[in-house]
Image (tube, rainbow, N blue to C red):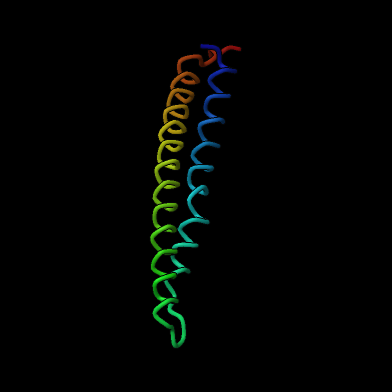
Length: 94
């Protein structure tokens, strides 16, 4: 593995970890904000809110799984890149 390829792998891995950290934020915030109670709710409003909360929970869990997969790939690239850079260190005199 060349030094350039190892550096690119490290950069790509770091970027994937950052993207994985940001991916589930919006679905989780939607899920959290959907649980706020209505003032003087009717039965229909409560049923609608329960259905929306269930859908938001499923959506948030899906994006958490996607974020976990992206983070795993990113960490693997980051470790491989760092390991490759360490293996291809330049000699002390150059």
